Image (cartoon, rainbow, N blue to C red; front, side, top):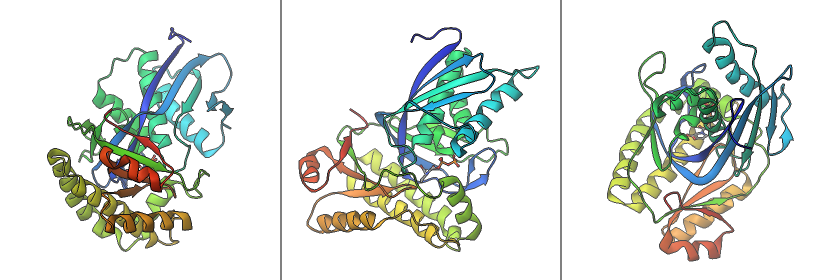
Amino acid sequence: MPDTGTTAAAFAPANIALCKYWGKRNQELNLPMTSSLSVSLGDKGAATRITITDHDQDIMTLNGAAVPLFSEFGQRLMVFLDLFRLNLYRPPASLRFHVDTTTSVPIAAGLASSACGFAALVLALNKLFHWQLDARHLSILARMGSGSACRSIWPGFVEWEQGQDADGMDSYGKIIPEVWPELCMGLLMVNEKEKNISSRVAMQRTVETSTLYSAWPDKVEQDLADIKQAIHEKDFSLLGKTAESNALAMHGTMLAAWPPVNYCLPETMAAMQKIWALRIEGLSLYFTQDAGPNLKLLFLEQDRATVQSHFNLDIVRPFC
Ligand code: 2P0
């Protein structure tokens, strides 16, 4: 369907953080406690079409299936659309939308589906209403839908600077204009089911109850510096080691929350142990893990065949 005055479509890539966002200083605006850094996954992401409808309520479809408006996801989307309906128009408009999203990443399995979904929605709204916003403002709007969505506005390496301002106007994603064509990310699915606790809830519980959380901002500061150095010098072992350690520290802070938050399954731990054993044998292979049981393996193109001989992976080369 072509874009017209009542419909527009856009694509945004999924992004995987190498230095994680975990914890908010403002829950309403999704303002983070720390900065974070991610890599976008090329053509893996969300394609969203938004259409103005004459229905009396919004319609949402995800990968061809209707999303109930009163599900958690439906509510989140509606609250986000209300920002535009209720605040951006004077007098408030009662527009209704059909939001139709197709993702090439599994939903809610820790593969950043909400990030690319909200980023694609903002890009589509920008087209539909001819806002002609720059990347900074698009990133800020995407952040208000889902924090990590502010990084999905860009391809490649992206840093989300935490910012200081109370209104969040200095908290958005910025591209790091360096490429690393040999870099590979292998998606290792150990379980495709939806996670049993949303990252939104888990994050807040960690901030409020984990005694380890006070150490997290310093850890992030050091890891961000090391990852940026690794990107600049193409030092893969520094990149892999720092990303893996950052993810494990994030999961450690969650385990110390109460009630504890654990996204690992036995298969997750088995895969980690296999990676550690292969590394002892000399393979330059690392992983990161988000709010789900699946792992993302980090390696270079030269080791692709060896890695593939050990794992069944969906491999992405973010810069190719
Ligand atoms: C990240 N995650 O940096 C971290 C690491 C998951 C683990 O950002 O509440 O969906 O919408 O701001 O962005 C997932 O959390 O949370 C996430 P909200 P979001 O990618």
